Length: 197
Image (cartoon, rainbow, N blue to C red; front, side, top):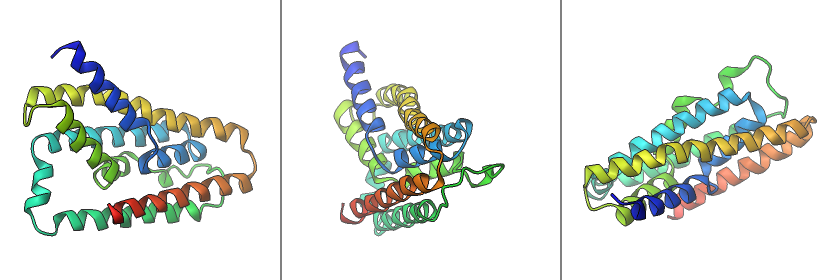
């Protein structure tokens, strides 16, 4: 594959990964609430979850949704339920930075699962595969996934670092409550896209 194809694939991966979406909002929130290492654990799970989804879509998983009755609707409602659960947790947060409460931070599995329930991830996978690969060409799909891996991790990681940057300047719980509630409302609003899409 030529450099002329790798560059547009990389640009697509960057645009899809760094643009705001449910996973990016959770990354930002994690950066404001938890140590960087915990936020980056979530990022690693979300990145690997996306890459596995991307390869699966490239190998035909997306077409299964059209064939199996009700599967797309089940996925849609599971995504809505999960995103609403996360937004309620974020909305109810008291704004205090946790000390020794690492079990509450979204972890690796939450990140991976979130990508499979994220409409943005499905759309990015299907449109990227359709635009830049020849149907079912495993070499092209794996190359694209290999490009996505570092680009997605760095993009999501930048949201965690942005949250950590905000955290350094936000010392009052009331301000963090306002930030968290804004993010919670945005996350819940993203459910409208899933329901109407």
